[in-house]
Image 1 (cartoon, one colour):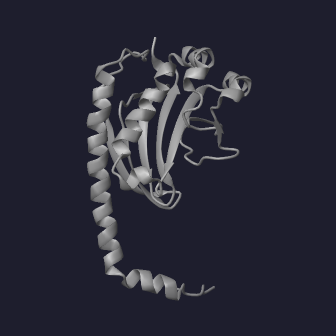
Image 2 (cartoon, rainbow, N blue to C red):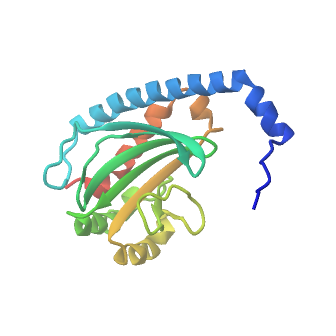
Length: 207
């Protein structure tokens, strides 16, 4: 059976013919890389001044820069700093630039120490609340959508609700998002946003 040959819509043809779009995209990706490299430096400064509760083998200098094209069909770049993925143990802070969505910074925790991290969230709840942080409700650490059904804002009036959610989870993901239309993007404050979010989640991972 012969299948019909796919054809391009006028909008698709216009995009394919727009060489400037692809040049701009390439330039943006280079800028994103530079911003994430600057963010790495800023986070290393943050890490130098704190004591953390970490899994065995953790190295605060370990990091990774990644880029791709298909996070739910959208390009992305991210920095993991610090980065610790060792079997079941995860202790990572990720700064993700996701085209068409937002900048997100997330603390990813699983395995060794998870009971203590969850206890810290409850015991130090009001140190975390009111800072635009959200608790992921997703069944995996690798879901990056936010909003109803995906994340729960960590606000002062939700301590009991957050505690109940944590009790049923084997991992923790705390995320903070900033839209691309936020004035801080135009002002060049993306590294500061990452550093501020890292400081905001420190009550979870400090002794």
